[in-house]
Image (cartoon, rainbow, N blue to C red; front, side, top):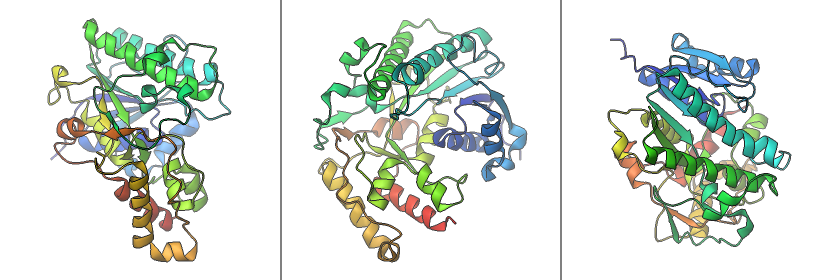
Length: 356
């Protein structure tokens, strides 16, 4: 029996780790997907994705080379019913704080909203956000690893970030400020009730998991998230952690959030938290070291051979939040739980061992 046609969803940044996983999950559920990317090369990458090849008839592609240009998303959103806006940049030192980070995040949000309103067919837009909006970069590395503050659907953005505008001091300042600005703008728009479509915001933890687009260990190590590299290869400790989430789980959250019948708008919180719930009896150091012990106990051969060098002491410098994702698990995962840090790192490690 053919799957029910759930309509068309445009996914920006479809060639990224979250975007690709969202595309796979969406077509499997019966959505038709418009992959919105920046280049022809990104389209070729997606077309070679093993899980997507059997769904080729459900997928089309659209190139938006510069999402800061006014009206840049208008044709990409034509005739779509849903949007998942993931496209963005990571705040690496080589990025210009204003031109490469802050302005693209804010302008692309504005252009998505504008296009969705113009086309007139969009029912719901899901935005990917970040826990970085809850901390101020000027706090530096003073937040500690106690995990004694709660990160849930009502944790506010840091109010001090809203006054940060270009020119900004660093890529990190730009990322935190842009996410805070976007999250606050969208929250206020929701409250106004003036839009013809609904808005959902998702705040993921550190995204971990394998990729079927990677075939070699060299590429796999480059693709891998900072948490996994620190745990498996004893690389330098990450600076921040706002929980952990498997890439498949975070994709599922994004796509399930599109269902405006099962998830009515009056039951949508400020933002859903996509991360495994924390154990309230353990702080950041205990959580991290437990994952290190798990690697050594379950991957003894790989550790003994030198494939992995466990970074048990490479605890992220700032782990201030205890994650409460109960609402997200109830609403979007149908009462199932997110995979834990141990489950995520085990899957990443086993995937890595299979690469050439």
